[in-house]
Amino acid sequence: MNAWNTVPRSAEAVDEAALVRQAQKGELDAFNQIILLHQDSLYAVAYRILGDPAMAADATQDAMISAFRRFDTFQGGSLKAWLIRIVTNVCYDDLRRQKRRPTTGLDDLPGGDSDDGAPLPSHQPTPEHVMLETELQQAIQDCIRALGRDQQSVLVLCDVQGLSYQEVAESVSVNLGTVKSRLSRARVAVRQCLQGVAELLPPEYRFDNES
Amino acid sequence: MPAEWTDAEIEQLSAYIDEQLEESDRTALEARLANNADLRQELAVMRQTVALLRDLPTIRAPRAFTLTPDMVGQTAVPAAALADSIRVLPTQRPRQAQRTWWIPAASAAGVVLLAGAFLLTQTQNSGTQAPSVGAVQQGVAVAVTSTVVLDGSAFNTVVLDSVTQSVPRGVPSVAPSEIEQSNDTAESAINAGESPADDGGTDEGVARNTLDSLPSEQGQLQIPVTMTQGVMSAPAMQPVIAQTEQEPRFMPSPTVEMLEAMIIPLASSTPPPTASLDSDLAQQSGESATANTGSGGGNPEQEMIAGMDGLNLNPNAPGFTVATVSPIQGTVIAQYNQPLSDQTLVLTPEPALSVMSESQLDKTVNEPIWIRWFNVLSEWVQNLLRE
Image (cartoon, rainbow over all chains, first blue to last red; front, top):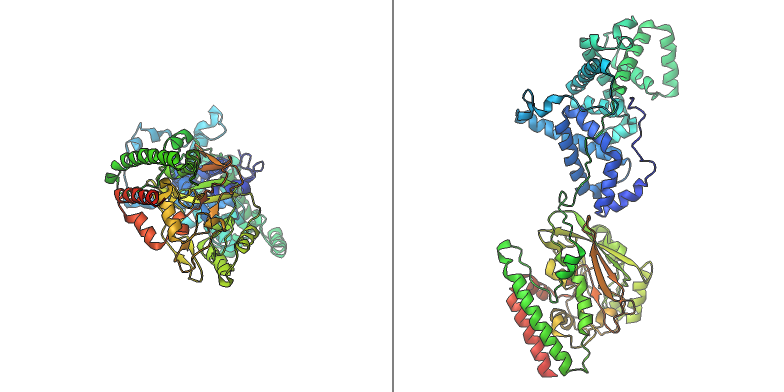
């Protein structure tokens, strides 16, 4: 399923502005409704950055708590972009922490809970393509994670999550020109990375077919 | 990236894919693409990369990430539990946990003692203007707002219906909506306000000023308060309006016991002992019990501090009986729905700031509770003897 044009569930049917007003008064119910509107996107961003379902879930939850506590600082604009910024910040904080103190949890050992691979996508691939798709998705995920933070966040938000340039700019607090340049470099980097796993690519995506 | 393409060219291709190029740039690029097979190939490869990324499966959240009150330091308190915890007198709630054990006991004993004494007073002085027990209980009902024990930084909201605002003489009025504004904004509003005291302002003037500042006579007031380790407080460093011409000043957030003083029966010039703290305040402010409604004579020399004005529940409006708490948000909703006759309940988000002198404020904060109880009883006895 293409994530590019997906719209948050029911986002258009809900008066988000009203929810924001209520949530800014500390109403947890209203804030929870906001979470429900955006949690898929927020979790997906966390997963693409962290590459681990459990870590992504923890980061998303932490980000929501942080967002609620800081919600009075939300000054308007794209709420989704604001939430994504918090999520990405939490993710990169986690990665920094992990880098400083690398640990291997029991779940990471063979047979552990985290040995289950990526979370199931919203659509189930056919059995014939399970292996190929899983490996390809993992390869793309690895390429995304190999990017530097600046390029990674822009690429994930724009190409994976389908945010507009403007929303990406708000999310990462840079101007549109920076978004464009980071995105172009990130795309080239991913392409070069994927050339290393060309055999996994569907025929129509094999870059060397173009020549 | 092939060596022959510059960063600018790659950036153009990338933006072209997303239709983010200016019209002139797009036209120029398309002209180049028409004549340059290598550039077309580069564009195709980039398109494929983007398509691969966009074709990644949508990841859905494995669970809901909604928050519970516990997660954000809020604790849901059932309304019934709040009703059970109504206390008549403001009590000193110690900040240290080890001091908490005797507070409820002392409070309970005091309540029983004072309730008995008050009933006795009612019997002996049927002609006094003391409020009825029922009225006192009603007045106390809102004190449940201060019994919510929460831990965290989330805001709770006290919502009051049927609120009218009045201010002591000489204190510029502030609309309830301004309470939620930032300190700077609120301070500006205060500075911009006209002080009736300057021209010996009449009560009518105060009242008019007050009404003008309200959207309507009957309204809803929302007071954001913070619960932290059992201490309910209004936002820290609320602007405080000084009476007469003193500079606005800032005081620390009120504590639970200050908030418990929110309800002040002011029907009598000799308030009952159950309102002794409030009578203290009324005496110190040099105003009669109805001063805060704008009919009493004030002492302009009295260094009285008013925080966001006194907020009087409309004496003609229904009484004050219901206090509920939203099970999720910890929102305290106090409702004003029974006649109070000549009783006036004074409610202010910062009672200590609105009606206490600085010395009284110090006393309230620092005095041990037994001294406060003693003072309460002594004063009551003195009042009885005087009568």
